[in-house]
Length: 76
Image (tube, rainbow, N blue to C red; front, top):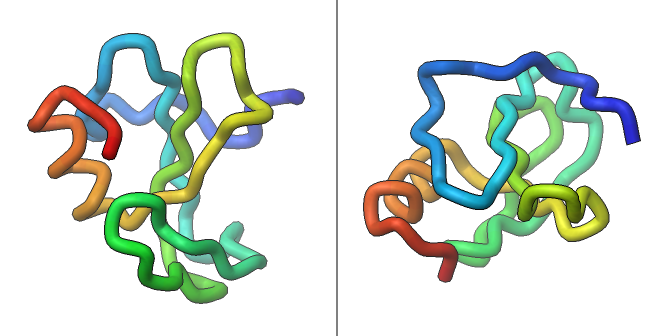
């Protein structure tokens, strides 16, 4: 799968994960955040992250939820 969004150095990294920002204008579907279980509604910018080399396991996160997970150094 080609990477539709460029690397964003302002996003907190998490070792072993690829992390990309999805701007609001590209957020065309709603998703459930794996951290808080709340919906990320259409049109809201967020983060998509997946284990390195496993893009089929990508998940969409609220930016705030991703920052908490990255700070803790683990995925819930």
